Image 1 (cartoon, rainbow, N blue to C red):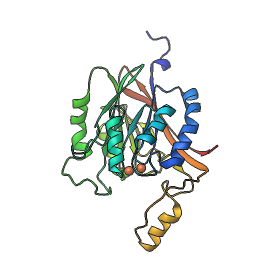
Image 2 (image 1 turned 135 degrees about the horizontal axis):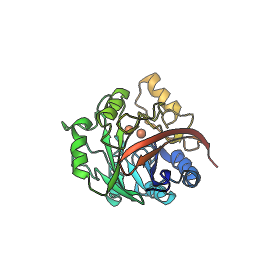
Image 3 (image 1 turned 180 degrees about the horizontal axis):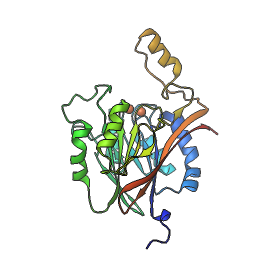
Image 4 (image 1 turned 45 degrees about the vertical axis):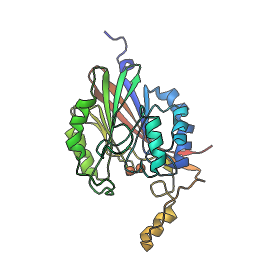
Length: 280
Ligand SMILES: [Fe+2]
Ligand SMILES: [Fe+2]
């Protein structure tokens, strides 16, 4: 019999899309305090926008590894600077997972297993198809069609919890995916929109769910990029390229805390946090 049930639970902290330097700074500044107060067994982050908003590099990933983040997920932008992301996906294939439902010609692993003191945690990343930039022209597989096969392929006796970052635009597709997998995985965490949603909940079958965790990126921006550039694009139709406000002093920090009973793999709690961090 366990002396303290709460202590036997697996606790995971997951940061939404860390966007450029402002996001990295806010996470690095906040994480020591969170490790102290929350004492998570595992820290994860979505890094599709890590390097100046576009993809991931070895250097930026290593910044976060040093800060104490254990595992990373991707999204449609992970390959924005492909030569850099290929290097990161290869060097850190044991802790950076790329979307599973894209062609096998892309670099990187489609599943990672991260070891904690409570057992191994299987982490996956799937792309939605509704309203997404049609970046991957492949007949393959919606996330719905592929995820159960993925799970069977990657399941092993040491896995105590399975978490999926569902990277998608449409709220309907996201909650439908949540119900599709309710009771089959420990958590479905939505990313990509950079806007946090107020619907964190444990679904009836024991899957922790949120439509979108939100971003870790510059406050006063449009989704983490300079608002003036986004406005120009909307007002003129010009294809202006986006940029990150590197001088941001306030940053939105968005994350969730999930608690999973490692004896059943079911979630018992999900808590979403959105705050403004003043950079030191
Ligand atoms: Fe993103
Ligand atoms: Fe995205």
